[in-house]
Length: 331
Image (cartoon, rainbow, N blue to C red; front, top):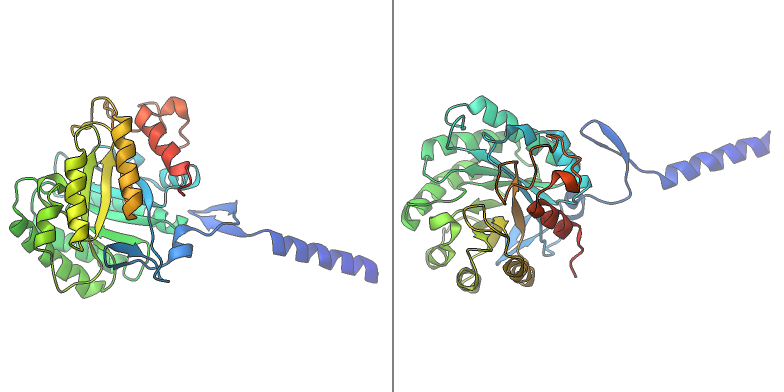
């Protein structure tokens, strides 16, 4: 009797000590690794570097969804699960369209549904998530209302990063700066510490101008630099170098290997130069985009499922390149 009891107890202790169950969006999986948020916790900015709760440098690598109003089918928990599990994305970006048909300005219910599904799934998966005001024009009052709602909903959640202006086009830095200061003030009134990403004029190319006149009075701000490798090369990297030398923190929240149109051939050599440059400066990045348009930068083919599970036959060349890069371990 005593031997049987001890054998059973030892068996139970073995099971308990070797198996760790985690729940992600309602699914039970076996896991022995910590998630990015478990590893790094609450993010902040020190100098030009994104750092974790321990003050150690953090580099996040991941993917951006396409415009929610053009590709709402991908905005679901299952696709986030797949990008985290199979592609090892550490950050995902919910690109909430503020322009074009069925945008946030026309249909806020759809926009909020799409964004919160991605954000909530990222939180469940323990990765970071960018809430992106995906606009090329200024809509100050609408942005203030939206980010106040998001900040209230996700107050204190370490996963969430706020990107308050995707790509200003015609507006000057003075106009973008004034807009940004108003939106930042609204977020900071509710959420005092979360990282906030600020855009710069001309599709986030003019980081050198922002570096000469940065926003003051707030901590944990970073500025977005966007590139498309077949169009943008050393000249834009030089602007980035200038901004970093001036102490401006950069986050590459959108990037890709083809032309700035989103189409044309992928310039693999220039893409690698950008990867090397980002790595050398410890810059985080999100590749564009989870979408199925007939263009080079859309990672998914039309037959690819909305919920993920994509194999090589479901992916365009760019999707395979990004997946393989995310799976590669950096030195």
